[in-house]
Structures are given as structure tokens and as C-alpha cells.
Image (cartoon, rainbow, N blue to C red; front, side):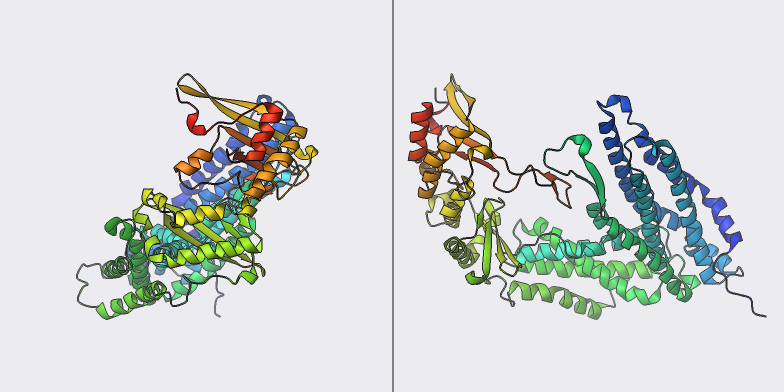
Length: 616
């Protein structure tokens, strides 16, 4: 009778446990030291209230859970190196394969033996944490349960991924290198490609990484984080709650880790014993390894080597040259690693030439602008909003303003040849973002000269940019005229005055009542804003701009965000406490006649040129 197929061997598992028990002991010590020890370091008596202590402890428990997820990234490949070590030594491989076990049984026994003790340590540390803090007043037990979930998901995800990487190679040292390379591959490729496009394509820009989720290591760092939330603006610290972002992504990684660890058995079944010790243990993957090494080295060398060897503004020819050289370097490095010899230059030139052509051709076509990207400007009728610069206040929604922004954009396109050389001079970055009526966006980023030569030229792009920034719509928005307010909306209104004292400058402040602030804005600031004589922005200092700046600044803060929930950004976890345009700060220009008159008549203040302050 034929015996049944088994996927686990107790004797082999016990052998692995006896040899490598210090690994799991070390993981348990880490869990108890960080996972349990860190929360124990927060004493209740050091907090002014029990609520604050409980809130901080809830935060710490989640922070530690996330930190242990990060630790799993290193623990996974270390355990996989130990469990799959029999694949990397010809002697050990021969001895294990001589045992009366199928390859699948050997592999799954090793994989399960590696992960089960880790999960057991997770549960043990969880029980200790639950016993110590589960009944503490104000502690949310769900946070302790989530702590266990995070650690388990991290262990399974990165250990499974490491086991998959482990069967691709026959060398112990190469396993972590493959693990890191595949863990960053999509992120590195996309960032290097986009960086090269920003050099080759005029006006190219990007926000974020679209395929970063395919790179588990950097994406986990960016998404699995602890954020805070409050029900209302200005809530006390004890009302802050904490949550962990990125848990669904971590769960998907866990599922992917399990799937990869199981699918790796298909490679194990076709793997030859004599490949133990080889860099690439699967013959069919060797051509893929050469191509990946060539493409990866070419992109990295072109991205970082172009600036290093050809200055801070490399030409397209320099980028293509570095692509080809990097591809050749990576290809022959891969060949040398596979064949374990440096005599690899006699063959493979045809394949290398095809790789270089496929690698360089898309960048050549991008430089030639075959898609019309560089000259594409949205139809004004389809544009709902244009954003200029990095300030949220520089948003244009009126038709005349949008047309002026598009005319400025057209000007930048016409001056491509001059602006492409801007990296070799002092330059200013100008982001342009169109929001279309269908919700899509069109973004560009330009570098334009911003040095003495540009300042002296009244027709320079930097001068044109200054004119756009001082369009009536933007001035009205910067002064609050677009919003409008009543005295009840004023939270704080302050005048800052700089005066001379000896050889120095002294700043003093004068607070206005809400009624005074409303009167100042209605009878002075907003009238000047309509005439374009206040709250102007200057991109560079010249005699005309310096003559307008006075020694008086005005700051206005408005209420209106108290009833809004805190807004949390997914990447930074920062809590935004104000809506756009709730805070205004600008200089009282000497050309602002209505504002100057109000200050003189109501406060007896006569602003003077800023250039006169501090003159002894």
C-alpha cells in the first residue's frame, strides 16, 4: 500500500529547534523588552491626571506595536536564513535530500518550524501585556489586541517573503541581499525613472510614488504609523485618541507572504541539489537576473552618476551615456556572479545591446517630447482652479486670473532653452497645478533664473511670476477680503512695529480689539487690496520693492475652525487646526493710502520705510 503524503516531519523540526532555539529566545527577549518593558517605563504618578496617563499609555502601546512590525523586517530574513540553511551548503543539501522525505515535506517543515515559535512568543508577550495593563483604568483593551495583530501580521508577512527569496538563491549571504533588493525594487525603479524624466522632460513633475505599494519595505515604513485624532479643534490632550494607519496594507502583505511561501515549493521541486552555493539557484531565472541587474544598475548610475560626473544639470547625452555604461556594468557583474569568474566579456554583447536599446529608447523619446507633454496647456474652459507656488493661498479661480496664469505658463514654455540652464544659476522652483472641472489635475514644475541678471531685466520670467502672484484675486485672498468676517470672527489682531533704538532694532506689538480690527479692514485694508497697493509679494529685492515695505506688519487670526474635526495627513500624522485662509499676515505697504490714513487717525501710528529702521 502506498503511504500518504506528509508535509511535516517531527524529527527534522526538532533538529531545527535544537540548533536554532537562541533565535526565538532572542525574539522573545525583544518582545518583552520593547513590547512590554517600554509601557512599564511610564509611571502614573509622573502625570498630572489619570486620564493623561491612560492616553499616553494607549499611544505607547500602539507605537511599540508598529515598532515591532519594523523589527519583523529584520527578523524575517534572519530566521529564514537559519531554516533554509540546508539549501546553501552542498554537503547539507545532499544529507537532507538523502533522508526519506519529499522536498515539499522538508521545505514546509522548515518554514513552519521557523514561524510557529515566533508566533508563540508573540502570544506570550501579548498575554503578559494584557495581564499588566488590560484592567488599568482608561486603557483600551482593543489597543492591546491590535498590538498582537500588528506583530503577527508583520512576522508572517516578512518571514513568508524572506522564504520566497531564500529559494531563489543557493547562498546564505545572498538571501538578505535578494530580500532587500526585491523589497525596494519597485520603489527604486519608479523614483529613478521619474528623476531622470525630470531632467530630460521640461516641466516634468510628480507627487508621490504610484507603485510604491509593490515595495513592502519602504511602503510599510510610510503607511504603518500611529496617528492621533480628536473630535473637535482645541480638544484637551486627554480627549485625543490614537489609531494605526496602514493595517489593511499590512494584512495584504501577510496574505502575500503566505502565498509566496507556498508558491516557493514549485521552485523547490525543480531545484537541483548541485545549485547549492550558487548565487542564482534556479537556471531559468539567470537571464532574468542579468536583465534586472543591467536595468537596475543603469537607472541608478544614470540618476546619481549624471550629476556627479557631468555637473548639476546633465545633458540628455550624458544621461543616455550613463544609462548604457550602467547597464553594461550591471550585466557583466551578474554574469561574473553566475559563472564565478571574471572571464565574461567574450559573450553576451548581443543581449546587452538589446537591453541598452530597450532601456535608452523610452528616455530618448521622452526627450524628443513625442507625446507633446512639454507644450500641453489645458483648455481654460475646462480649468476650475490654478495653484501657483507652494502656498495654499495662491489659488486662482476667476476666469481672468486663470487666463493670466495660462499666459504665464505659455511664456515659460517659450523660454525653455533659457530655463533649462537655470540649474547652473540661482533659480526658483515654480510649481503649476491645474484642477480641471472633471476633478483631474495637470501639474508642472519649472526652474527659472532668480539672480542679479534676472532682477535687472524687467521682462524676465521671475518678474512675470511676481506679476502673477500680485493678481487682484490673490491680493484679496491674502487680506481676507475674499472671505469676509465680522467682529465676532476675530480671534486675534496684532500690529508689529519695528523701531530704532541705538544701533539696533526693537519690535513691539499692539493688540487691536475685534471692533478695531473690523474697522481697519473695512475702511483701510480691503480698499487698498482692491487697488492692489497692499499685501503684495516680491520675488527679489530692488529699489521699488524696498521703497514700499514699511516697519509695520499686520497679523489677523479668525475663528471658524472650532467645530471642525482635526484633519490628519496620512503621511505625516500632523493635525491641521485651521482651515485655509484663517490666518493672515502681511506688511502695511507705504502705498496703502487707506490703511495708512486709518492707522494715523485711529492709533496715531505713522509707518516709515523699513530701510530707515535701524539707521543710527
